[in-house]
Structure formats: structure tokens, C-alpha cells
Length: 185
Ligand code: PRP
Image (cartoon, rainbow, N blue to C red; front, side, top):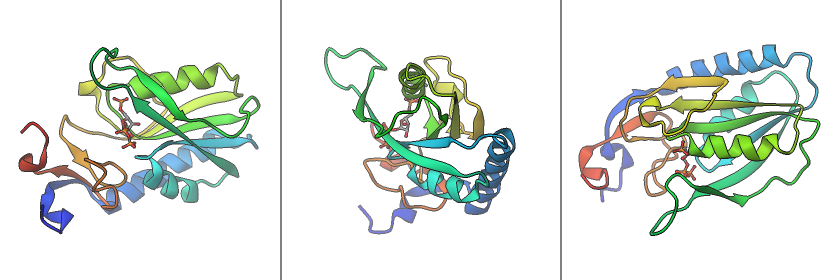
């Protein structure tokens, strides 16, 4: 494996400037929609969304809190396709909060469907989903996304929080991996 991860990138799909511009627009939408709310809570789904969260939180002009959750998919023999499980829960009650779930990408939709069900049962004041990317061509379940950054094609995208085998999260852009680095190619 070459030392320089940039050598693994086929092409840049969304550059840093485009990302930052769109994130500010999303933050402005959230700021406007929640202009009357004091108790806004951003819930970041680990780990992919951390970079997006870090920029989104600084672009938001309303006071808000941050929380983190970790979800994992079940893999292997005998598991139900699309099943996910909670790996790390919130540290606080959300019953009076305006919750915004922050994701890096909605792919099959299974993670967000699970998150919505779990959080809705805890009776927040409101619940919305904000995802930097959406890949509708891979959807397995229907999900509502309230704020979307970009729709991406069915390519293996990495960078800006998104990984392959835990690498590439630190790239400041969204890129497409070269075919030779894509599993099963
Ligand atoms: C990715 C991404 C979303 C989820 C979306 O997480 O961050 O949470 O997959 O996929 P879905 O719509 O098909 O459920 P991943 O499990 O790769 O973990 P990571 O965030 O730690 O990279």
C-alpha cells in the first residue's frame, strides 16, 4: 500500500470549497428553522459523521448541545440483512430536546431507520435527520432526511469522515477510490 492516501483516489467528487459552502447553507437552514428553540441537541452517529459535525456545529448560529451515539451493523452467517444494533448510547434524557441526528451518509437507510425508531420512543420535542451525503440508488428502506448536503452516485466514496477499512477519514474532500483499492474488484 502506498504511503500517500491521495494516490488511492481516482477523482475528487466534492471538493473542500463545495463542502464548506454547502455546510454553511445547511447550518443557515437549521438556524432559521430552529430560531425559536433553546434546547437543540445535535446527535452525531460515530464515527463517519465527526468531521461533518465539527464543521456544522461551528456554522450553526443557535445555541446547541452535542451528543454521540455508535451503531453497528450485524454481519456474518445467520444475521438478518440490514439489522443494526446500538453500541454506545446517549448520556442524557432527550424528552424536551429538539434533536437533529447528524450523519455522513445515508446508504441503505437501515441506520437512520433504526435511529429514528429508537429516539422517537424517547419522546423528544422534535426529531430531524441531517446527512451530508445520500446515495438513493442503494436504498433498502424508505427514510426521511430533513437536510441533505449532496446526492452521490453509486461509487465507493471516502474522505471527510468516510472510510474504507478505517482509512481516508482525514481527507478534506470527498473522493472516489481507485478500482484497485475497492474490495472484491
Ligand atoms: C456508515 C455511515 C452511516 C451508515 C450508513 O457507518 O456512517 O452511519 O454507514 O449506512 P446505511 O444507510 O446503509 O445504514 P459505518 O457502519 O460504515 O461506520 P462508521 O461511521 O464508523 O464508518
